[in-house]
Length: 186
Image 1 (spheres, rainbow, N blue to C red):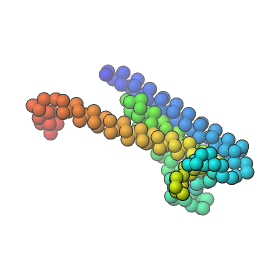
Image 2 (tube, one colour):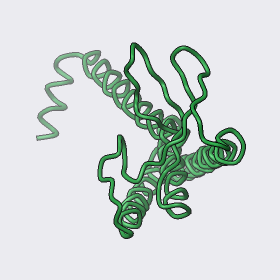
Image 3 (cartoon, rainbow, N blue to C red):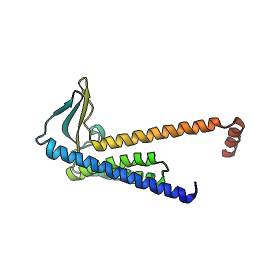
Image 4 (cartoon, rainbow, N blue to C red):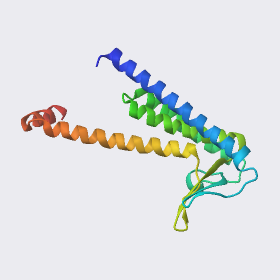
């Protein structure tokens, strides 16, 4: 791949990541608006299936309520931390050559932005999806959380698949070529 093709691929990755981020954040905010203004007015528990409920919750912390704080500065510290992470993810998205990686990073960015909007607007993140089994409830979450989870899972799977492909490529080389490559890298 030439330098100009590589640069074009990276720009495509950034634009794909940003488009996915926009879609994830928009879907998250739209779902929260419907939940807050229509479905949970008044707030209540809605049994959808034997293992899934809609319920309204507000998370002042991060995952599973960790770092939760009633201090006025708490949400703003989380907003600043999240925006720093988003900036790092955008830099990463500018450097990827894979559409899968770009889309996954976009999902994480969009989910993070969706939750930042909640923190800025109301000081807490709106959660409403409640899965449960045998009396055990997974902590309630939202579409932003799902986008973050799916993005991270896709990044891990992509990394694992790339490592396996690299291992197969190395193992497919004749032994004398692998020894020469190891000597030249040292």
